[in-house]
Image (cartoon, rainbow, N blue to C red; front, top):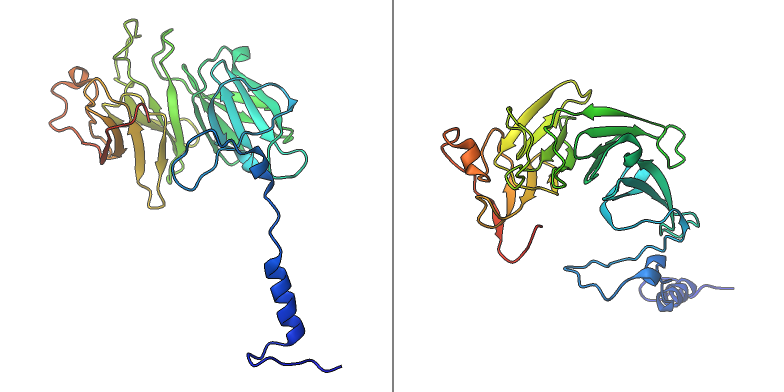
Length: 277
C-alpha cells in the first residue's frame, strides 16, 4: 500500500489523524463541576466550592494557604487547623483532617500562616507556634513556641498576621495595632503596630517598620521587595498598598511615634473603593 503525500509534505493518513483529533472536544476539567457561578470575581478566575464530604467539618475558615507537600491548610477563628486532601485523585480536595486544635494548648486567633520546608508556622494572639507532621498523615506530631515576645491582652483584635518567609530565610510578620484597644497591655518596646522578623532558629528578632494598622496580606516579589496592604483609619487616609522600606514609619497612630519620625512613607497605591483589603 502506498502512502499518498499531500502538497504540504504531510502524509494523508497523518493529516486525517490530526483533523480527527482537532474535532474531538477536550474533557471537562473536574473542578468545573464544583464551580460556584453565583460569586463575582475579577479577572480570569473561578470560584470552586470544594466538596469536603469526608473527615471533620470546617466552619468559617479565616485563613486558607498552601503548606508542606502542596497541601491546602485552613484555619478556623476558633482555633482548629485543617489539612485538605484529595482522596479520589481528581484534583479536588474532598477530605478535611484536623492538623491541630490550638484551644488544646491555650492559643487563639490563628490568622497568620506560613511554612518553611516541613515546618508550619501559625501566628496567634499570643505567640507564633511551629508544628511538624513527621509521619505525613495530615496531623501535627509535635509543636513548640517559636516567638512569644508580643504584649498580650484579652482583646480579640490582637492578631499576629501576614506571616511570610523572606529571601533571607527569616519569618516576617505583623503585630496589629493596639490603638483601638482600650485595655491594651503595656508595650514598652513599641512592638504593636509594626512589621517584625525572626531568625530561622527563633533566637533573634528585629523590628522592620512601624506605623502599621492591621495587615492581613503581604508577600515578597521575585526581586525580594515586600509589598503589604494596610487598612484605613488612625492616620491612614485610605486603604493602602505599601512597599517596605526598612526602619520607616507608615503613618498609623502618629501620637505613639510623635517626635521619632520626620516623614511618613506614603502608599504606592491607594485603594479608594475597597474595605480592609
